[in-house]
Amino acid sequence: MENMLRSFIRDVPDFPEPGVIFKDITPALGDAGALVDIVEALAAPYVNEGITKVAGIESRGFILAAPVAMALGAGFVPLRKPGKLPYEVVREEYSLEYGTDALEMHVDAVDATDRVLVVDDVIATGGTAAAAARLLNRPGAHIVGMVVMVELTFLNGRAALNGLPMRALVTYGD
Ligand code: AMP
Picture 1 (spheres, rainbow, N blue to C red):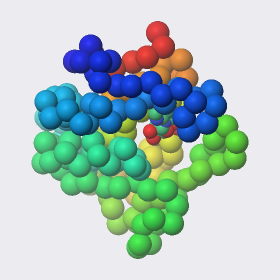
Picture 2: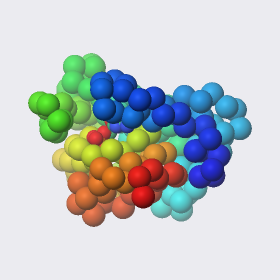
Picture 3: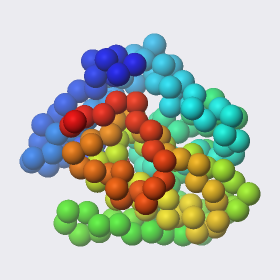
């Protein structure tokens, strides 16, 4: 799985800004066999965890979270950038290198009976993932864990997660 992923994940230097090496997952998504294998690998550790909702982080997280939710027999919850969700939202801000950003979730998307898996494509500094966890905690949902395709270990995103268990299919930087 790791070698397959490494062959399908493309480094794009200086995107979206100078100094960032962007991990482009579109070659992996575009391969029919890889797409099935990735969704199956993301979902497999959680089949017996009683997951009721899979939360995807905008926007590449959505692509993975919906089929993972189907594989687990769970619902899908979008965590979106500000102003995108139509109904009443809760909101959590997080720091970027320059300024802040935020994630929003519909107020009724999860409740205290839910067992939630959070899905994204890449974890870098962990700021986005930590904001996602804070959002889901507000209505009292139980966050079982987080799973990503790619972990950039040199940015130490795990440390931002306050002990939330996180799995990655492939790591870069160690
Ligand atoms: P962070 O909050 O720093 O962990 O950033 C995570 C979010 O930014 C994820 O939703 C990723 O999709 C995106 N991201 C950050 N760094 C990269 C990178 N080098 N390549 C691809 N996506 C990235």
